[in-house]
Amino acid sequence: MPKSFKTSACILAAFIGLLVVIAIALWLFWDLNAHKPRLEAAASRIAGMDVRIDGRIGIAFFPGVALTLEDVHVRNRGTEVVATGQARIGVDFLALLKQDIRLRHITLAQPVIYIERDRDGRYNYERPEKIRQSLPDLRLAKFVIADGALRYRDKRSGKHIEATGCQLDARDVQLTGRQTPGILKQLSVAADLACKTVRTNDYAAADLNTKIAGQNGIFDLEPLTMRLFEGQGTGHLRADFRHALPRYDLSYTLTQFRLEALLKTLSPQSVPKGAVDLAVKMTMRGRSMKQLKQTLTGEVTMRGADLVFNGRDLDETFDHFESSQRFNLVDVGAVFLAGPLGLAVTKGYDFASILRGPEGRSEIRTLVSDWKVERGIARSQDVAIATRRHRVALQGRLDFVNARFDGVTVALIDAKGCIRAQQAIHGPFRKPVVEKPSTLRTLTGPVVKLFKQVGALFPGGACEVFYAGSVAAP
Image (tube, rainbow, N blue to C red; front, side, top):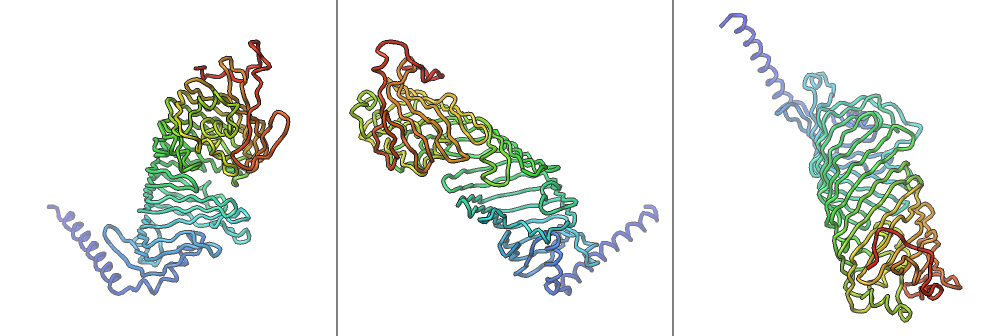
């Protein structure tokens, strides 16, 4: 073996030995907890928020040098933003010897992230205008969340979202030239995200999985998959934060979901059952719910076949509608036709009389519900069902910006698509008004006389076609 090689090997071995001795000395004699205020100050500067370490600080050397922080809290304007039982932070060893902290990787164990929007529309992570400033650059080879949770709450609307059992594996995280607000414009990241459950006020999804690619203010989540209403969903979400108002583009399909799982929030009793397909393609802009509603544009399509409803024989009811004074035709539209859009407008009014009918059984052979949304207003395109002997169709608009029915009519139609009976409904979602042949009456419950008979006006002759869509007459 050449002498120069032996010399180099000896020098390398001595250097490694020196590092080991230094590491042991640091571990034995350097009380990191005495330096807690400095660590908190450095972390606060990097995060742009108030970071506090309420537990102990430790140091590990394999694999690599890492600080272990216990019971860490990140707060802003007096509210909790992040709380984690343990944070493991990989640091540059040589820089640490100079008491300079340079981060390499971060792992958070069982963290809870709190995002809250107050009644004035401000988020808890936003900083006051007078102290907004540039923050130091941040580069991480890896950022990991193990068994984390996210809790979102909007105090103004009362809405909340909670994601649990979340695993995040982010790579090549870079924040350069950071400014607050607008921090997402400078974020670059590639990540895998998975959550066991995602819950809102009304619904729950499971097994959310997606890959995230973010650069220059644009974030793509694709494929975005989850189980919802016992069906499997997949799609793509793009979030663009380059402009004053963020833009969101969503394309999503939910195949063979169970209609009863969707409708059970209307009534714990009997609900229509069967498998349905849903497709959504939407674009929206804004920072507030109001702005998002005002810009909501896209299409919603729902398709179903061979659905079963135990609790009422709709064909028998339609055959004797003149004597069915307690039957609400609008319920059929809300329950069977409008789908998720319809459910969004039923909170203030009892649309469930159809679910509390006498004993019976109905077969819904075909269900079609197509809507076009422009600037927050959903317009019916092809909305109808067919039972064994009848068809029911819906026309009109749902104004989500002003929370109103806009000329919505549900009609029992004949083979030509002409009206046999109809009910028109308009006014606020929470207190709708139904139009009758000669009067207007405010709805205060599910019991309303609904039918306007016009078939006698066209005895065997031509009529104005109400429905000419894809649902064929039985």
